[in-house]
Length: 499
Image (cartoon, rainbow, N blue to C red; front, top):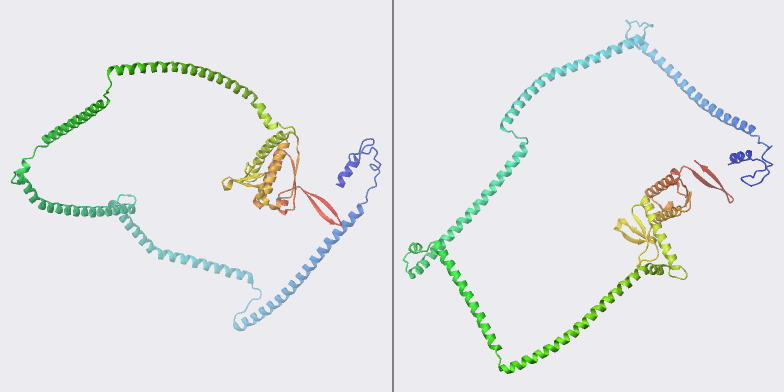
């Protein structure tokens, strides 16, 4: 901030207003005493060099101590090894008196030679064990070859005996068929037993009924049952006689019905026969004619009245059509009278506010889809209170008051309404900034990430400056540019721009 003010101060021109205070004269724009920061910088550099040198001296001192201790340990180990070598030499000389050790022997070369010999011996032992394994494996290989040949022969025999692709499935199928055949056999055996039982019962019934049938046939003049069977009619003749019998029965029934109808008609005519003479009947006829003429006159009068009524109905229909036409023309004025027909304009105000609220809720639901897929905002119905209603789509579209929502859910709905209000107002006024104060602490981590993604997408799409005022620490990781407010005590605070 200080560097920026110095830049503005260097750009001030006389007789031109200052962008900060508006003055035309700028006495401090030139010949401003400069601060002597060079000495302080040298002192700071010397302090930093001194600190680095002190650290380096401490590090070298500790390293020197470690090296001194290591050197002392190495000297002690060398002296110990020399004592052991001297004792080993004395032991070797005492043990091998006839063998003189050359003091100039190159022990390193000798040790290397012995190590090479040991390596060669180890390689030889490995090769020997490998060849022994091969020698032992040759009989096993021959046995495996013999087993493979036997297996090939068995496979060939199996292919000759069975040409299918799945022997287990075929065996199961044959086994199932065998079981089905056994069940069918048992079923047929049971049916055979039942049939034999029925035949035995029928034979017993025949034995019982034959004497009774013989008695009846003897009454009809037949001495034996075969004689009666030979006397039976042929099937064709029996059918012809049966058809003729049925036809005769039908004709008899028809004649009987006709006779009954004729008898009933005759009885009816007998009841209608009158006792008056022809003169009396003629007088009654003349009287009836006069009544008929009188009724005809009344009928004509009624026809005239009916005609007048029909004419009146036609006129009434024409009047109704004219009234309907005029009602159509006055409908818009009637509707406007219902909406804004108020001396104070309250009806029109309510109507306009309802339209604005509907548009606001529509835009809020569009924004709410980016934040959560659970809720929609709607106006209250006639049987609900005056507050807004949240539609819970995860509960089958259940309607509930926004007052029953949790803190996080209320913040999500409030944020969608705020964004919708910004969208609604941006049609007439350009809004380049949006500030959201608190409310993020009530959100769970998943909803918080989704809300921040929506705000970032809104900022990218509309190029708006979006500011978030919050104490939530997890927001620091998502927001690059920050203004931190820190308390300094005694009622003062400081601002720091980060990012």
